[in-house]
Image (cartoon, rainbow, N blue to C red):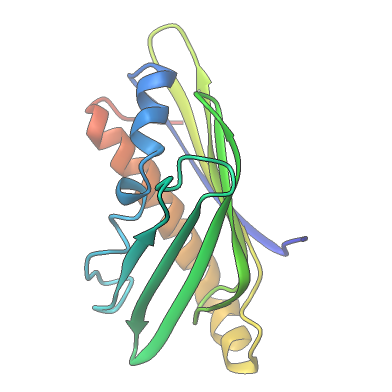
Length: 166
């Protein structure tokens, strides 16, 4: 699938690639910014369900359900690439019920250096399929996408306590 929009966030983290990958390989940590009410979610939040692999195998499934502005949301993701400690990618399956973005491919890449690792978190996405979703997504999609990848990157940097923005 091709995607028409993208965002990424990069940080330098004082941690080994293995430790950083181990932290990010847990989707509960990756999703923490979505599972708590926030300004960006306008008080909404998502609940997560995992298959037995908990998203730690190629083909692993993750389901998210929730509400945003009174609308029911649903998305299912599948792990499509996992190369510890370098890269992990997941993408939506079926047609997600989301308001601001539509189908997406998301992941992270880690470049090991001598005393730190460079982390890049990215999302490639389409606008929602509905006319209303396209209108809203045109304006809010880029903001939301930057927020999402930025939160994952900054949460990882905070976890390892020595962030340095690239």
